[in-house]
Amino acid sequence: MFMSRTTLENLPGTDSTGGGRTSSSNSGSSGFLRPSYLRGSHYLARLEQQTQQKAQAEREKNAVAKNGGEGVLQGNNSAVSQSYLGITRDVIERTPPHEEEDAVDPLPTRWGSGKDDKADGLEVLSDGLEVKYTGSRNPTERDFEACAIRADHTMPVQSGLYYFEVTILSNRHNDTTIGIGFSGKDVSLSRAPGWEPESWGYHGDDGHCFASQNAGKHYGPTFSTGDVIGCGVNFSTGTAFFTKNGFYLDTAFREVKGKLYPSVGMKKPGEHIRVNFGQTPTRDRGGDTLIPKEIHKLEGQIAQADTSKLAPPLDETDVIQQLVLQFLQHDGYVETARAFAKEIQTEKQALCLDPNTEVPGIDIRDDQDANNRQRIRRAILEGDIDKAIKHTNACYPHVLEENEQVYFRLRCRKFIELIRREAELNLVGSGGPKGTNAVASSNNGYSKNSQSEDMELDEEMEDLDAQPGVHDLAQDALQYGQALQAEYADDERKEVRTALKDIFGLMAYQNPLKESKLSHLLDRKGRVAVAEELNSAILQSLGKSSRAALENVYAQTSVLLDDLAGAGGPGAFVTLQGIIDEIPVPNQQI
Image (cartoon, rainbow, N blue to C red; front, side, top):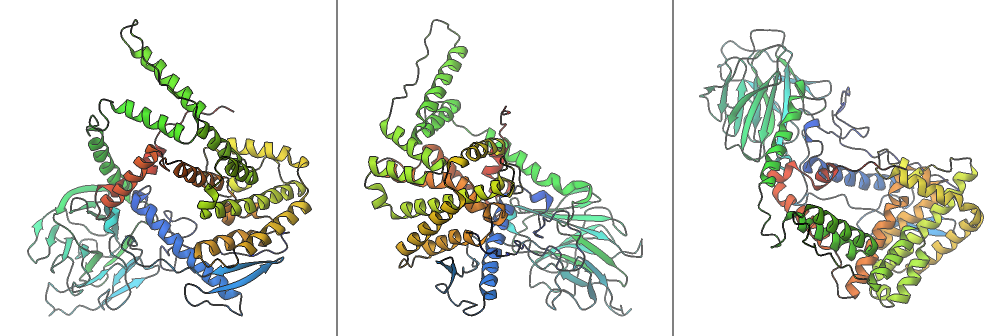
């Protein structure tokens, strides 16, 4: 079936250096800038997602343009048709994400090079990270005149805390008039940072700091050639600080707010600096200790939170146990819920001081609906979509009729399973290792479930000889795809056309299991999403909540974190996934 191959470009990211030499140990292979102190933060996760979405839209636009003919598409509803063995797939141009209210600001990546970003007497060198004073200084010029430059982007407030470092490269060791700090967009570039309204700076010649005025105050030591000066702004507290050679110098400014750019000012020929906006680890890894300190403070506040009023008379442990039990029952894991309830009772009995006191058990009743839903879920997770549809229609005959989108997702998943099965047979026929989970390995990341997934794939491979041959599966997939396309030929919904385009695109590859860019379609996790959606639809038809209480708690917490992170508040320093990742996982013995 896989008669042709389409070469897709690697996902591009932001240009971390703006050209020239690349020295980014904090950038991935895509060039996306990941300052080490922001890794794992709410802000960086959202920025990376936003960057990937824009890159995806750009890549699809370029792919359409390369096809020629109907080439570049105009408007959101434009499409060009491509055909694979009789199946036409519509390529839809996706509009790149707009600057919406929930979009996050980008990170500074280099010094600005436009006339509005730097004074005439400064030259931006090599990769955009170095600046040198090249102007000539007239002896009659006033002392307060200088040349300043600002970065290409503001320090993102949503990050909660931003930090950058400047290395002094000047030839004159004891004659440095460099100022380091930050300023607004409209601040004059003929004055050093801190001397103008809406600017703040720490000056190397006298060790003074200046807050939007000529009069400074003593702050720290002087600095000169070879020194590394760090500048950080904590947006959650509205304070700013500096470091020298990795050592913290205390708070320099308070009530700092607004959209501010990293900035540097110079006054004398030969003065020369290089900035680190996160391309490399900070000096003595001092920057990496900043956010952990904030997280430690937050953890202390969370630990002190009063949970007694959450669900009286239950204490915190009881609430957690009840949430887990309700989740298991809600999703149809009746036997697991029963085993968990028994474990809870055993634990409470062991902790009871009076051996004559009987600890009441938790009654987990048999639920036929739960058993039906679990059977349907199991069929989907095993890739048997036909069985899942059959059981659903038998037990809940109106669910798929009333939830057309769920039915469409099931139909698409069946096509994917046909393609996946054929690809697995091709792997075996080409001498590929039977126990290789091609989709999991293509993710280029460690999966806690990789060993169990490999065992599942081994079991699937052992049954391949009993399944239809490659040719039969190819024909089945082709016929099913044509029927699916015909069924939704007149459906103009963008999400439907996009989904069909994505799954029909699998046919363009010799073996999609070997293509990492397709792993999101073929991964077994896709089965879970479809199973959850169908389970929710069944629950709604029964007049029950489509989500378990634990899922509601997770969703509500996620929304609250977004709100707290919006203005650089405490929500910027933590993520739910980060907290989950810290939960110890027992070693699994195979």
